[in-house]
Length: 111
Image (tube, rainbow, N blue to C red; front, side):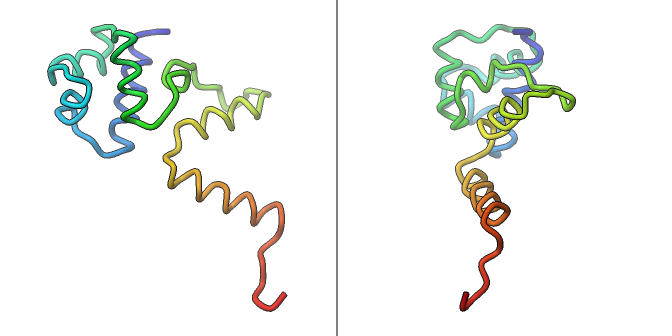
């Protein structure tokens, strides 16, 4: 895995959940400078810190390390898994509700 790609993914996840570099640094017990270096791909992240980051972001380590499937990827299951892993629990609930409506039709009152 390319450090720059991993760093970008870490930054995206941090921003997705609305935390600052300082908050992430405190959570995984490192300096803010270290987080900045990791996000820019200038520093590698240890396995221990990667585990803590995945816990903080509520995603799997695999989702942080996995290369994003391209839009032309024929493997839809891979695309769905990648997106699902990046979604928050709240977003996952919304996705399930939308899928239920799409597959089972909109439920009308009284029917």
